[in-house]
Amino acid sequence: MSFLNWSVLPDIAAFTLLICAFASTARRHYSPSARAWLIGWLMIALHFAALLFVKFKGFPGILGVTISSIALVSAGELFKTSIIPFRKESSSRWMTVMLLAVNALYIALLTTSIEPAWILNVAATLIGIGPLAIALASLRRVNCAVRWATVTQNIALMVFLLVFQHRPGNGGDLALNAVMFIVYLGCSINFLFAYRRATAGAFITIAGFMAWASVFVVGNWLFYDFPQLHIEAEVWNLPKYLVAVGMILLLLESQIEDNKYLALHDPLTGLPNRRLFEDRMNSALERSRRNGTQMALLVIDLDRFKLINDTLGHHVGDLVLQHVGSTFSERVRRSDTVSRTGGDEFSVILEETTNREEAENVGTSLRQLLEPPLDLGDCEVQIGASIGIAIFPEDAADAESLCIAADHRMYEEKNNNRRLNQDVPPAKRKYLPH
Image (cartoon, rainbow, N blue to C red; front, side, top):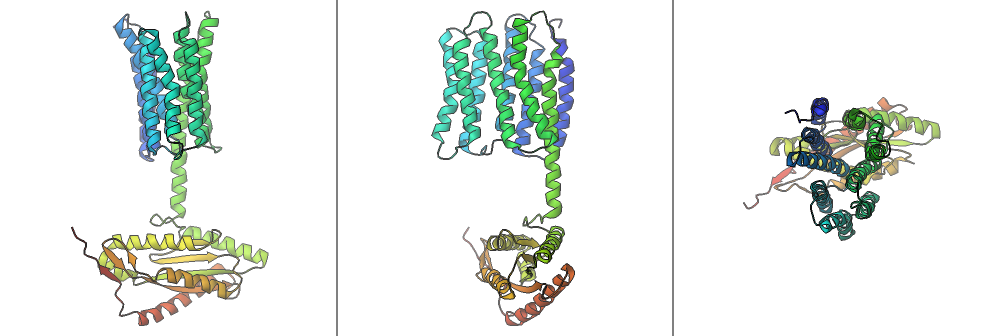
């Protein structure tokens, strides 16, 4: 027990608390990235736990150094690949698995001083050639700067290792620190690509990874060139805490962004809700007044939607609403707004409409999009739409009056449609073979 490295116990305790805080924050915003980050921090905890045994002589001490180093570099690889934009692509998974395996193999060979020396050369070569081979094999599917940055870093690392790893005296330390430096430098670069925003979380995380990478260069330099200079281990661990705090802030910032989005958008269709619709309506009216132009409001109510809900269930009704929302969004211009303002009611703001005829043409095209029966797999539904159109400033001069005018015309058309379509079945169940 006297050989245990008790100096790492404060770090183990501190990181245990940080991991608990991270897990609690990630639980409210769980994502593949957050899961990879949590696993990475568990690897950091394993790194500190293995450091307890590095003062043992012989095999236990070597095993402690090996596990500690592999856990540290594996955590970096998980952080680095967690935020790439194409991480679901199969080649990205192969790249991650390959880098984890090759780095672990190289560190195990390096720390245990396996002979003959050519085995270490082969492992070092795989560190550079492996990512290049995967990148070239998947070039048609994935070709972006982040991947080629990783390939370039690993090729540079391969060259460095082949040149310096067998250097007498400090070759092994140079090689191990070079692996760590490249991995955490890659983390900083990948997070810089992924989080191009001026937020505290992004800045602290990117700066923390850069500082973490520099530790392996500065620490090695001070150890060999200024051996009389003693710096406490806690100083070298500060970048780890910085990154942990930065990642927690990133999760909290994402939660805030999600809450803002949910406050202004319909969760079923993803369209602007009534609150955002009213804001955009007022903005569109203000622009029309300022520019002396017209704008149009279309209020659209789905016909026979209640019957579909009652006969086939709310799940089918939700599918209908999602289909209508995406269909309308694809039809209008990007400068226009499609929103879900009620249960089965949609509203469309057409900016800079030149006349009523243009607005009516848009309304007719939206109505025609709903005329064909909608195939939902095990059933077909026949829906229609009643549309009311109001023009600013011809029909009303403010938002409330414009909505009232459009609603009034929509209900007039709905009553006419109800008389015309009262014998049309809203849905037909399709019996599919089992």
